[in-house]
Image (cartoon, rainbow, N blue to C red; front, side):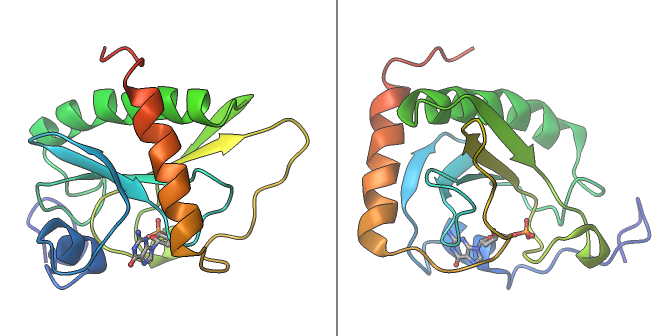
Length: 151
Ligand code: DGP
């Protein structure tokens, strides 16, 4: 157990920890010393991106303040680029805590999902997208990041 909360301790066998260690591939969009953004393999809409802090925490409940301080500006930067890349009308940010809260991968992450008026999201953890589509979408966001304000 984590001494700050009554949630279980962080387990570094989770899939995002493996991506961070380079043990499994991802369609990386951008990273800095503290955070990384890559495509969700089961997108709820084209351009669905995950933002993950590199420091280990299970979710928002056990994350330290330093991690959170670095994370939110990064989330916003990616959200702005996703909005530009997909000409979105809005952005949905989702963040789930524990299984009862909808979390399936137990390393803190934010979902950044472009939205268009009148278009419903696909189911959370629905079908896998093809590598070609994920890479093309990652590339759109990488391009948009070149003209997106950092702060
Ligand atoms: P959640 O923990 O409920 O916030 O959802 C985890 C998300 O991670 C879900 O939208 C699907 C995605 N996902 C699961 N496995 C992988 C993977 O191996 N690579 C990537 N890029 N995304 C994954």
